[in-house]
Length: 142
Image 1: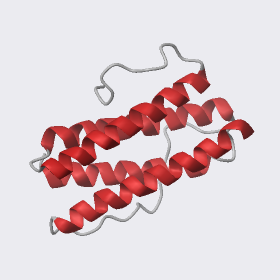
Image 2: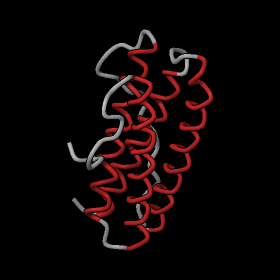
Image 3: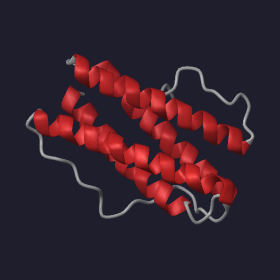
């Protein structure tokens, strides 16, 4: 995997996370709706930063897929949180790969910042789900 491959994979994970957050908005509890809005905005910023890095590297800007399929049906707040945790875990894995594959310090910083943000969001959603511990050692390592 090259740096550009890792950037592309991270952008794709961000698009999928944005989709997942949009879908789950209808199912999360009312006390989490503002957080969902905040987190989806954060994912959009990251997506744009990653796409800008790709364009700077001479790679075409990535666009979202025509659709996304979750591995399970989201029907309530419990499955919504499960889907959000999965989206954040996937993003963390792609950011970890980006850190590992980065040849450029600025790209590595994008990866570290993205990994840090996903770890923070994962901690929040693990808390909402009642999972213990609320933090995960070595985010992005599956």
